[in-house]
Image (cartoon, rainbow, N blue to C red):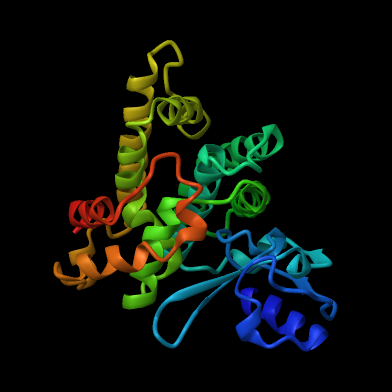
Length: 288
Protein backbone atom coordinates (compact mmCIF):
# COMPACT_ATOMS: atom_id res chain seq x y z
CA UNK A 1 0.00 0.00 0.00
CA UNK A 2 2.86 2.38 0.76
CA UNK A 3 4.36 1.74 -2.67
CA UNK A 4 0.95 2.29 -4.28
CA UNK A 5 0.66 5.66 -2.55
CA UNK A 6 3.95 6.91 -3.97
CA UNK A 7 3.32 5.46 -7.43
CA UNK A 8 -0.05 7.23 -7.59
CA UNK A 9 1.63 10.46 -6.53
CA UNK A 10 4.55 10.23 -8.95
CA UNK A 11 2.30 9.31 -11.88
CA UNK A 12 -0.10 12.14 -11.15
CA UNK A 13 2.32 14.91 -10.28
CA UNK A 14 5.46 14.17 -12.32
CA UNK A 15 7.51 15.07 -9.23
CA UNK A 16 10.90 13.43 -8.88
CA UNK A 17 11.04 10.94 -6.02
CA UNK A 18 14.07 12.69 -4.49
CA UNK A 19 11.92 15.78 -3.85
CA UNK A 20 9.04 14.19 -1.94
CA UNK A 21 10.71 12.74 1.18
CA UNK A 22 9.77 14.28 4.51
CA UNK A 23 6.72 16.19 5.69
CA UNK A 24 4.54 18.07 3.18
CA UNK A 25 7.11 18.01 0.37
CA UNK A 26 4.77 16.09 -1.95
CA UNK A 27 2.88 18.63 -4.05
CA UNK A 28 0.36 16.45 -5.88
CA UNK A 29 -1.93 15.81 -7.58
CA UNK A 30 -2.04 12.03 -7.88
CA UNK A 31 -4.00 9.44 -9.84
CA UNK A 32 -7.02 7.76 -8.14
CA UNK A 33 -6.07 5.48 -5.26
CA UNK A 34 -8.00 2.64 -3.56
CA UNK A 35 -6.32 0.67 -0.75
CA UNK A 36 -7.37 -2.77 0.53
CA UNK A 37 -5.31 -4.10 3.46
CA UNK A 38 -4.60 -7.83 3.66
CA UNK A 39 -3.11 -7.61 7.16
CA UNK A 40 -4.48 -5.93 10.29
CA UNK A 41 -1.47 -3.88 11.27
CA UNK A 42 -0.17 -0.86 9.43
CA UNK A 43 -3.38 1.14 9.09
CA UNK A 44 -1.76 2.53 5.96
CA UNK A 45 -5.11 2.50 4.19
CA UNK A 46 -6.14 5.59 6.18
CA UNK A 47 -2.84 7.41 6.77
CA UNK A 48 -1.04 10.16 4.83
CA UNK A 49 2.25 8.33 5.31
CA UNK A 50 4.39 6.03 3.17
CA UNK A 51 7.54 4.33 4.46
CA UNK A 52 10.05 2.86 2.01
CA UNK A 53 13.29 0.92 2.67
CA UNK A 54 16.07 2.39 0.56
CA UNK A 55 19.00 0.60 -1.09
CA UNK A 56 21.27 1.61 1.82
CA UNK A 57 18.79 -0.05 4.24
CA UNK A 58 17.62 3.27 5.69
CA UNK A 59 13.85 3.67 5.96
CA UNK A 60 12.59 6.97 4.57
CA UNK A 61 9.13 8.42 4.74
CA UNK A 62 6.71 10.68 2.91
CA UNK A 63 4.01 12.44 4.90
CA UNK A 64 1.45 14.35 2.86
CA UNK A 65 -2.31 14.77 2.57
CA UNK A 66 -1.95 14.03 -1.13
CA UNK A 67 -1.33 10.32 -0.51
CA UNK A 68 -4.48 9.74 1.52
CA UNK A 69 -6.54 7.27 -0.56
CA UNK A 70 -9.91 7.99 -2.14
CA UNK A 71 -11.33 4.77 -0.73
CA UNK A 72 -10.30 2.13 1.80
CA UNK A 73 -11.96 -1.31 1.83
CA UNK A 74 -11.74 -3.58 4.88
CA UNK A 75 -12.58 -7.21 4.06
CA UNK A 76 -11.81 -9.69 6.87
CA UNK A 77 -12.06 -12.62 4.45
CA UNK A 78 -8.78 -11.46 2.93
CA UNK A 79 -7.04 -12.03 6.28
CA UNK A 80 -8.40 -15.43 7.36
CA UNK A 81 -5.49 -17.40 5.86
CA UNK A 82 -2.82 -15.08 7.24
CA UNK A 83 -0.22 -17.17 9.13
CA UNK A 84 -0.30 -16.93 12.93
CA UNK A 85 3.13 -15.28 13.22
CA UNK A 86 2.19 -12.52 10.76
CA UNK A 87 -1.19 -12.05 12.44
CA UNK A 88 0.61 -11.64 15.76
CA UNK A 89 3.31 -9.23 14.63
CA UNK A 90 0.98 -7.04 12.57
CA UNK A 91 -1.54 -7.01 15.40
CA UNK A 92 1.06 -5.81 17.87
CA UNK A 93 2.09 -3.18 15.32
CA UNK A 94 -1.47 -1.82 15.36
CA UNK A 95 -1.42 -1.75 19.17
CA UNK A 96 1.84 0.19 19.08
CA UNK A 97 0.22 2.74 16.76
CA UNK A 98 -2.58 3.29 19.25
CA UNK A 99 -0.30 3.47 22.30
CA UNK A 100 2.17 5.86 20.67
CA UNK A 101 -0.60 8.05 19.23
CA UNK A 102 -2.17 8.39 22.68
CA UNK A 103 1.11 9.42 24.32
CA UNK A 104 2.62 11.46 21.47
CA UNK A 105 3.68 15.00 22.38
CA UNK A 106 3.01 16.20 18.83
CA UNK A 107 0.91 19.35 18.78
CA UNK A 108 -1.71 17.48 16.71
CA UNK A 109 -2.51 15.14 19.60
CA UNK A 110 -6.12 15.85 20.50
CA UNK A 111 -9.20 14.31 22.17
CA UNK A 112 -10.35 12.70 18.92
CA UNK A 113 -7.05 10.93 18.27
CA UNK A 114 -7.01 9.78 21.89
CA UNK A 115 -10.55 8.41 21.54
CA UNK A 116 -9.55 6.58 18.36
CA UNK A 117 -6.56 5.06 20.18
CA UNK A 118 -8.76 3.81 23.01
CA UNK A 119 -11.37 2.30 20.69
CA UNK A 120 -8.61 0.64 18.69
CA UNK A 121 -7.06 -0.91 21.80
CA UNK A 122 -10.44 -2.21 22.94
CA UNK A 123 -10.88 -4.08 19.66
CA UNK A 124 -7.26 -5.23 19.33
CA UNK A 125 -6.78 -6.28 22.95
CA UNK A 126 -9.96 -8.36 22.99
CA UNK A 127 -9.33 -10.09 19.66
CA UNK A 128 -5.63 -10.56 18.96
CA UNK A 129 -5.24 -13.95 20.68
CA UNK A 130 -8.32 -15.36 18.97
CA UNK A 131 -7.19 -14.06 15.57
CA UNK A 132 -3.75 -15.62 16.05
CA UNK A 133 -4.87 -19.02 17.29
CA UNK A 134 -8.24 -19.30 15.50
CA UNK A 135 -7.51 -17.55 12.23
CA UNK A 136 -10.88 -18.27 10.62
CA UNK A 137 -12.83 -16.57 13.39
CA UNK A 138 -14.41 -13.87 11.26
CA UNK A 139 -15.46 -11.73 14.23
CA UNK A 140 -11.91 -11.59 15.58
CA UNK A 141 -10.53 -10.86 12.12
CA UNK A 142 -13.08 -8.06 11.65
CA UNK A 143 -12.20 -6.55 15.01
CA UNK A 144 -8.51 -6.63 14.16
CA UNK A 145 -9.06 -4.84 10.85
CA UNK A 146 -11.28 -2.22 12.46
CA UNK A 147 -8.84 -1.76 15.33
CA UNK A 148 -5.92 -1.40 12.94
CA UNK A 149 -7.84 1.16 10.88
CA UNK A 150 -8.79 3.22 13.95
CA UNK A 151 -5.21 3.11 15.20
CA UNK A 152 -4.13 4.29 11.74
CA UNK A 153 -6.47 7.26 11.99
CA UNK A 154 -5.16 8.00 15.48
CA UNK A 155 -1.51 8.17 14.49
CA UNK A 156 -2.29 9.90 11.20
CA UNK A 157 -3.27 12.83 13.44
CA UNK A 158 -1.00 12.22 16.44
CA UNK A 159 2.23 10.75 15.01
CA UNK A 160 4.15 7.81 16.44
CA UNK A 161 7.45 8.15 18.23
CA UNK A 162 10.46 6.28 19.64
CA UNK A 163 9.16 2.71 19.33
CA UNK A 164 8.97 3.19 15.59
CA UNK A 165 12.22 5.14 15.45
CA UNK A 166 14.09 2.27 17.11
CA UNK A 167 12.21 -0.37 15.13
CA UNK A 168 13.23 1.03 11.74
CA UNK A 169 16.96 0.11 11.96
CA UNK A 170 16.06 -3.44 13.00
CA UNK A 171 13.88 -3.83 9.93
CA UNK A 172 16.10 -1.94 7.54
CA UNK A 173 19.43 -3.49 8.50
CA UNK A 174 18.31 -7.05 9.21
CA UNK A 175 15.18 -7.51 7.10
CA UNK A 176 12.96 -8.06 10.15
CA UNK A 177 9.26 -7.33 9.58
CA UNK A 178 8.04 -3.97 10.80
CA UNK A 179 5.54 -5.40 13.28
CA UNK A 180 8.09 -7.73 14.85
CA UNK A 181 10.65 -4.91 15.00
CA UNK A 182 8.11 -2.85 16.94
CA UNK A 183 7.27 -5.66 19.33
CA UNK A 184 10.96 -6.24 20.11
CA UNK A 185 11.52 -2.73 21.47
CA UNK A 186 7.99 -1.83 22.62
CA UNK A 187 8.18 -2.56 26.34
CA UNK A 188 11.75 -1.33 26.76
CA UNK A 189 10.83 2.02 25.20
CA UNK A 190 7.73 2.14 27.40
CA UNK A 191 9.86 1.55 30.52
CA UNK A 192 12.10 4.41 29.43
CA UNK A 193 9.12 6.69 28.75
CA UNK A 194 7.35 5.82 32.00
CA UNK A 195 9.97 7.86 33.90
CA UNK A 196 7.92 10.80 32.62
CA UNK A 197 5.03 11.29 35.05
CA UNK A 198 2.47 12.32 32.43
CA UNK A 199 3.32 9.31 30.29
CA UNK A 200 3.07 7.03 33.30
CA UNK A 201 -0.48 8.33 33.84
CA UNK A 202 -1.27 7.77 30.15
CA UNK A 203 -0.05 4.18 30.23
CA UNK A 204 -2.05 3.59 33.42
CA UNK A 205 -5.13 5.01 31.70
CA UNK A 206 -4.75 2.69 28.70
CA UNK A 207 -4.11 -0.50 30.68
CA UNK A 208 -7.73 -1.52 31.40
CA UNK A 209 -8.73 -1.10 27.75
CA UNK A 210 -6.26 -3.80 26.71
CA UNK A 211 -6.42 -6.04 29.79
CA UNK A 212 -9.94 -6.09 31.16
CA UNK A 213 -9.04 -7.67 34.51
CA UNK A 214 -7.02 -4.65 35.63
CA UNK A 215 -8.09 -3.02 38.90
CA UNK A 216 -8.67 0.69 38.26
CA UNK A 217 -8.42 1.45 41.97
CA UNK A 218 -4.65 0.90 41.92
CA UNK A 219 -2.25 3.82 41.60
CA UNK A 220 -0.72 4.96 38.32
CA UNK A 221 2.66 3.39 38.94
CA UNK A 222 1.11 -0.02 39.63
CA UNK A 223 -1.15 0.13 36.56
CA UNK A 224 1.65 1.41 34.33
CA UNK A 225 4.10 -1.30 35.38
CA UNK A 226 1.49 -4.00 35.03
CA UNK A 227 0.48 -2.68 31.61
CA UNK A 228 4.07 -2.95 30.41
CA UNK A 229 4.46 -6.41 31.97
CA UNK A 230 1.15 -7.48 30.41
CA UNK A 231 2.26 -6.42 26.95
CA UNK A 232 5.51 -8.31 27.43
CA UNK A 233 3.60 -11.45 28.40
CA UNK A 234 1.20 -11.00 25.49
CA UNK A 235 4.04 -10.92 22.96
CA UNK A 236 5.46 -14.11 24.44
CA UNK A 237 2.02 -15.79 24.49
CA UNK A 238 1.68 -14.93 20.80
CA UNK A 239 4.97 -16.80 20.23
CA UNK A 240 6.79 -13.72 18.98
CA UNK A 241 10.60 -13.67 19.37
CA UNK A 242 11.50 -11.23 22.12
CA UNK A 243 15.30 -11.03 21.94
CA UNK A 244 17.43 -9.66 19.13
CA UNK A 245 19.82 -12.59 19.46
CA UNK A 246 16.97 -14.98 18.63
CA UNK A 247 16.89 -13.35 15.19
CA UNK A 248 20.66 -13.74 14.73
CA UNK A 249 21.29 -10.03 15.20
CA UNK A 250 24.81 -9.67 16.64
CA UNK A 251 25.35 -7.77 19.88
CA UNK A 252 27.79 -5.38 18.24
CA UNK A 253 24.97 -4.21 15.95
CA UNK A 254 23.38 -2.37 18.87
CA UNK A 255 25.78 0.53 18.38
CA UNK A 256 25.03 0.85 14.66
CA UNK A 257 21.27 0.60 15.21
CA UNK A 258 21.43 3.32 17.87
CA UNK A 259 23.22 5.60 15.42
CA UNK A 260 20.69 4.83 12.68
CA UNK A 261 17.73 5.40 15.01
CA UNK A 262 18.91 8.96 15.64
CA UNK A 263 18.25 9.72 11.96
CA UNK A 264 14.51 9.27 12.59
CA UNK A 265 14.05 12.83 13.80
CA UNK A 266 10.54 12.98 12.31
CA UNK A 267 9.52 10.38 14.90
CA UNK A 268 11.79 11.12 17.85
CA UNK A 269 10.40 14.65 18.25
CA UNK A 270 7.03 13.10 19.18
CA UNK A 271 8.40 10.97 22.00
CA UNK A 272 7.30 12.06 25.49
CA UNK A 273 10.87 11.70 26.77
CA UNK A 274 13.95 12.79 24.83
CA UNK A 275 16.05 9.87 23.62
CA UNK A 276 19.78 10.31 23.13
CA UNK A 277 21.92 7.87 21.15
CA UNK A 278 23.20 6.38 24.41
CA UNK A 279 19.60 5.74 25.52
CA UNK A 280 18.82 4.01 22.24
CA UNK A 281 21.92 1.87 22.64
CA UNK A 282 20.88 0.84 26.15
CA UNK A 283 17.39 -0.06 24.93
CA UNK A 284 18.80 -2.26 22.16
CA UNK A 285 21.18 -3.89 24.65
CA UNK A 286 18.29 -4.59 27.02
CA UNK A 287 16.46 -6.58 24.34
CA UNK A 288 19.53 -8.26 22.88
